[in-house]
Length: 574
Image (cartoon, rainbow, N blue to C red; front, side, top):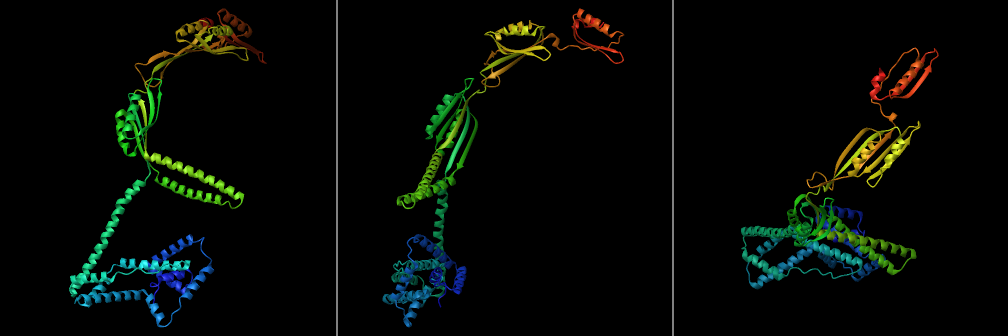
């Protein structure tokens, strides 16, 4: 009785068209779980059916056409019955086919022996033939069974699609080849049981060796070619930055250009800047072949003192091939949209929408093409950015000497002195600020600022001091480096304009050097207060303020604030 394994192609075809019952479907699925070969055939059948459905989706006829074709095909082949039907059913079985082929081959072998007159015992040759079949490698059996199943699947698919093809099977091995091979084996091995066992062992070892060698040869190219092909397809962008301190900028640029030409590269950009101290600083960008990058960097070390160097590699392989795949899909979409416009079918609004989408797709295509071109240019050549600076770059070119003076001027007439100082303005004296202030009590003060050329600064400051009494005179000097920092033996020192800040106040507004408070008890407060004021005026002092009061009990109280020079302080106190 035929099993599911023997007629797997018919079972799979029936399962695909939904002609199996529930019990038959359970049998098929149980067998697929157990049999690896049938499970593989099932996967191939599903894949082939899916491909055919996608290919013939637009050309598949209606189901009634398929039924008519199958009915017509069955009517052309008359149904057999009786012994003829049984014989044809047996011939469909694979075991019967193999047995028939083996019988034919055995008959041809016996016929050949009879013609050649060989007397070798047929039983030994038959046993050897059976042993060869028994010791045949399972992979060979699987390899011979798979094409037959694939052929059966193709035939069933062609019949279902209405496209009959040539159903002839491949011819088996010729009888002459089989006969000569068996004859050589019989001559080489006498018909004994021990020698037959030895021949079987040698045949098994020979087959195992013949299978192991091709496998090793097949594995060697994969191990040798895969890394090379993967490395060739990688997209690597190499970049380097170098910072050098050199003696002469122009000479260094010329040398770098020569190095780039030697390494089959070129100088992309060059820029330089002259500092205040006369030194040059700049940057040179060089493009060289990636394989020559290390040698080029080694040459740069001889130009001067290496301050810093960085070397980096960016792998853009994934981004590159992702963009390339998206570009191909965009081209396909572009062609589809163009075909839709060529047909000119549909509404005008739909055509306008297609044109809009076509413009967007083309914009994306141009963008992706630009990205791929940029990556190709970056991969083909490595970029080296070289920063150059001449030695003693931070050495100052000169020193600027800035002087700043300030003083407080006390005078009885603030406004007069204020106007006198403003009259100092000239080509050598610049008044930068002048303010005259008056508070709510009527007190007047002024502030002034001026810039004086160095050669006239001492004379102008002396004239200002002669206009009144000077207090808190200060002079500050600051040395500022120009064009760098640090010290320099050859740098010149230049004096800048002197800045003078002046504060003008009345003498009574001057801050006192000493303050004294006296409490005097007397029988006549009013008279003693008048005598104190007169005494202070005679000694050169001034009365700042005075108050007089009498309480409810008739007690009198007077407060007098005097301002006197220090030279009469002792006499006044006595």
